[in-house]
Image (tube, rainbow, N blue to C red):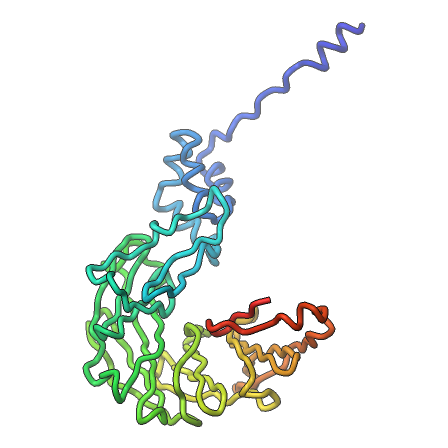
Amino acid sequence: MNRLRRRRATSVAPLVTLPDDDDLLSEILLRLPPRPSSLPRASLVCKRWRRLVTDPAFHRRFRARHRNPPLIGVFENYLGYPFFRSVLDPPGLILRERFRLRLAEDEGGQWRFYGCRHGHVLLFNRTKNEIVVWVPDTGDHRRVAVPPEIDGKEKFIWNGAVLSAATADDGFSSCPFKVVLVGVAGNNTQMFACVYCSESGKWSDLISVAAPFLVFFFRDPGILVGHALYWMASGDHGSTILLFDLDNQTPAVIEWPSDSDPNCYTQTWLTEGDCLGVATLSRGSLQMWERKVCSEGVAKWVLQKTYELKNVLNPEIRSNIEYVTKPGMLRI
């Protein structure tokens, strides 16, 4: 009896076989996390898996299922050149060299990173007065001279954004894109925008709007909300927001939340409800605002939350809070 029990205890469980149906296996593989290493590692399991995960139709379904791709890293402006820094741990860690654009004029670089969207990266070279639109996945890039009337003397470019068709697969050949540049003119009394279309290869006319006060520069990368781009601008009376309507190609100034201090530290972001958000920090109070459109179609600022830092952080930490030179970042 004891021998029989020992045999049963040491018997090996039957191996679980993989599904024979490719459609069923594809459905399982579609549920892999959308990390950069997921599909390459799956392709190493066997030839069958490799065939399934390298199929273009599977790639389209995989992207459709994981609509919001994960954050794999950030670009940082450093010594006149944008450097990539991965935020993933091994095996998903991406080396800096994987996303490095090599240009002939790299020495003493004057390149400025303005943002990335839909797989495209926008860079601006103030010395050469030109932009570069770069697709890191393929290495494709296009250099475009900015309109000659933006001379860097009376008209200055301070920020920009790139937009493209998010469903394209192979770089510039089938993926038209647009670039929106914004800046200041008229001795800092006006804010302007201009649009480049890759399909026509032409820039639009400069479109200006009066600034509410002297505006010196635009801070963080533009935020896309619906069919409009938003930038935070700073000047002699605090901060304001420039809106650029992509449909009508018209700029406008957004009024600041009436109950907040425009001279405080500020940060814009895209809220969970896909609205424009503004965080303000003044006198130890952090306020979170959201710009919502009411039933009448009128947009207004709504205060979502208020945090009193004295109730959140202990005195030792509060005394060590300082703002660094990079806008929108706190060091604790």
